[in-house]
Image (cartoon, rainbow, N blue to C red; front, side, top):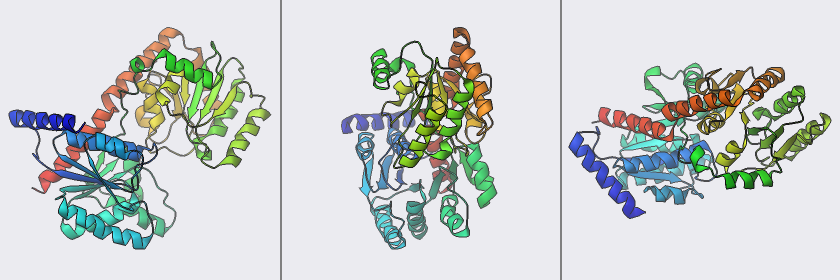
Amino acid sequence: MRNHNTFKTLAKRQAESETGAGATSSATILQVLPALGGSGGVERGTVEVAGAITDHGWRSLVASNGGERVYQLQRAGAEHFQLPLQSKNPFVMYANIGRLEKILREQKVSMVHARSRAPAWSAYFACKRLGIPFITTFHGTYGTKGLLKQTYNSVMTKGVRIIAISAFIAGHLKQFYGARAENIRIIHRGVDLDSFNQSKVSTERVIKLANEWRLEDGCPVIMLPGRLTRWKGQTVFIEAIAKLGRTDIRCVLVGSAQGRSGYRKELERLIEHHNLSSVVRIVDHCDDMPTAYMMSDIVVSASTDPEAFGRVVVEAQALGRLIVAPNHGGACETIVPGKTGWLVPPADKDALAAALAEALSLDESARQAYAERSIASVTKDFSKTAMCNKTLKVYEEVLAERG
């Protein structure tokens, strides 16, 4: 794998020398985040951008507390430095300034890209001491109640560039933190079209998962993916299905309770209350989401609070699924109503039921038209490649300004 990455790097450098591409011929970029475990957008985006940096012919470094994605990072040709960056303890955060400063000096880092608040504070002061450019990615709203909370969050606006993962987040930055528009760059999250691709999901995988979830043939499947937490809108979804009044469909809530056993029991009681035990079922976390989407006819996002971006929407669209989502947050940027999905008022069970009824009523030709438009939209604007290229452009922009 190292040889493969070396060849790609040499090819990239040769192409740039022949075409004059690349404002900066060589750079070392350090990304910092708490850890590299789990399936969140921060961790996945870090690995994806790390690989893009390497492919660009630059040196890619990541500092975190480690995790199962370190192996993916190393396969992408990046180097990992393990530090306790997940800690919010002020003394540990202060010590991390010196630890990061040592890495910046020894590795001759050109720029630091911070993706989370605790490591961002340490990186910000380390960069300030050494005069190294510091940029951030603002991944969520983080909550703004209280001066202490806002002050803690504010480090994510201290970058010479602030990457917002949606126009919604860009507006949030301006409204709550007074961030300057000229410093903000909107870069939507990207879908890996090698994985979320209809041609890559085999019939055998779909059949296997359908058997595991006990889904009968011939029934339309409606899926709501998302961890079991109230703001993800599972109760709204169940109420909408009850309102729909159909027993010839199968509905699946896909997501881990993450210790919220009380909320899961509440959902189970609500399903039983509406006599939907044969229609709605709750399954745990799924490790094969492309197959889960392909097995579904309709995918729903029902979040009652705005999603910073809403990965579910574009993943479902990439696989040509019909998608229904609330008309707030990032979904308003990824769904064109009547063309690539449906937008409904948040927490409105009647509107959600009506949209589901309309989606279920489409004939095969109409469904195919939705699928083609959705796949084209994601391919053009929301791919992993587009996200990585735009991020590299920000790096080039800042490095060029710094000479």
